[in-house]
Length: 95
Image 1 (cartoon, rainbow, N blue to C red):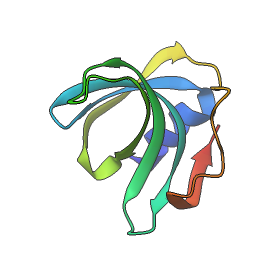
Image 2 (spheres, rainbow, N blue to C red; image 1 turned 90 degrees about the vertical axis):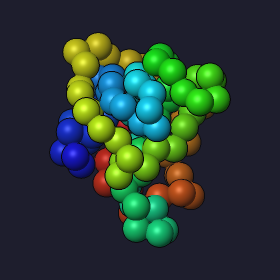
Image 3 (cartoon, one colour; image 1 turned 135 degrees about the horizontal axis):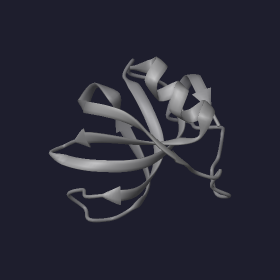
Image 4 (cartoon, helix red, strand yellow; image 1 turned 60 degrees about the horizontal axis):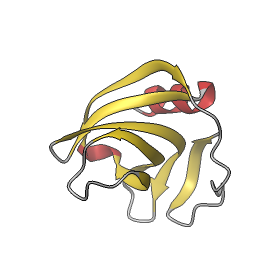
């Protein structure tokens, strides 16, 4: 899954996946390993649904992601994105 996520990040293309029973559409900004060893994705959710019904910055546990697809739609770097993400060390790829 790391290669799919990093491909999307490097080409700044949207990802679509199932997470927590909801389809998400996200702008992936960074991928790395959490302090507890989980593979994580920092992304800005721009579409789909969630239990909180809110869009915006989210941290996804990639172990809970299903049916991930890279979409042929590009996104711009979010001005409020912070590359130094305390939730991840090491970071595998980032915009």
